[in-house]
Length: 246
Image (spheres, helix red, strand yellow):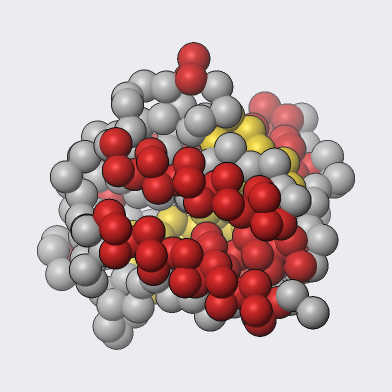
């Protein structure tokens, strides 16, 4: 039996949480038949980062396991929690998918198919690998920061990424639990990629559609200023290189 944990980081997603989680439930139920793999077992876990809207009450109406933080901890903390939960549940793989309708649950089967090939440790969605898959243009500052930092990561680490910040990913649990990650916020990918390169994790990107339904979405903590955000992410990358590079 191959166990796969599907984790959904959530913060104030009352508008979308019910529809998205129901669709994910439906899609993962179909994957064993799609792949002709009766040995696949899925667990769906909602990770509520102390939402302050109606999200908690809506989650309570769904037959889905959820974990609620006692205070807001950040996106990176949710990813660390995903890895810890995957290890505790003996899940060979964990998949992260966002709850804001910018990731398409029907693509979960593609991540599982890539994981089951067994030759990589991280399967990372890319919204920029193929512009033919673009549904929306990305906000200019987000696209610029993503492109800049993706290029800097590639140069510094010898990677070949096209999208360093996509949250739709599959991770081999045994590979990522040894990374000792502690970046709690949106800077998490900067630490993750440095640690992944330092541990020689094998990475594959797969193209997904670029969907931006809310271009005004805020980062908080001063990071809505693109210059502050870029500097913060660069600082995280530098600290990670100092930590993980011999």
